[in-house]
Amino acid sequence: MTDPTILDAINTFTESWSETETRTKEAFTNLKAHLEKNDGITLDFNSRPGVSYSLRACHAAQTERDLFVMMDVIDDDPNERWLSVCFYGDMITDPDEEGDLIPEGLKGSDGYCFDLDEYDENKIDYLKARFDEACANAS
Image (cartoon, rainbow, N blue to C red; front, side, top):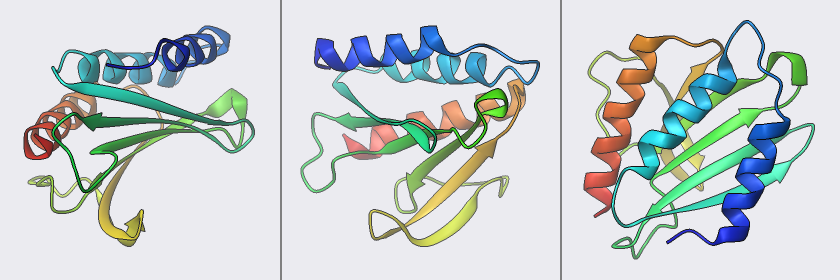
């Protein structure tokens, strides 16, 4: 179960985020809502204004890793924020080869990162499938 202060921090961040025509806020909230539908999920949130806002999900059954997905809102330009969604390479597949392999890029392990700089329903659905796959593998 996610700590209420973490949920408050996420909500405060989301409420303060002004949507742009790229609709990345909508993409973020859509993906976050999908994560929250899974049982046994705990969210963590790391806020580094001007750099990134990092939403991380962990499954209660995980013992060796403290997350199965990390969704960063990149804040180098608050008017044009974009998402970087990263998974451990051994927890997902990437059948459409949409992600970038990042050797040792996720907490010292190989990972796949998917960048989303505008709302795209097909990419969001693809990421949701990766969320489900990583969550199942985490449990």
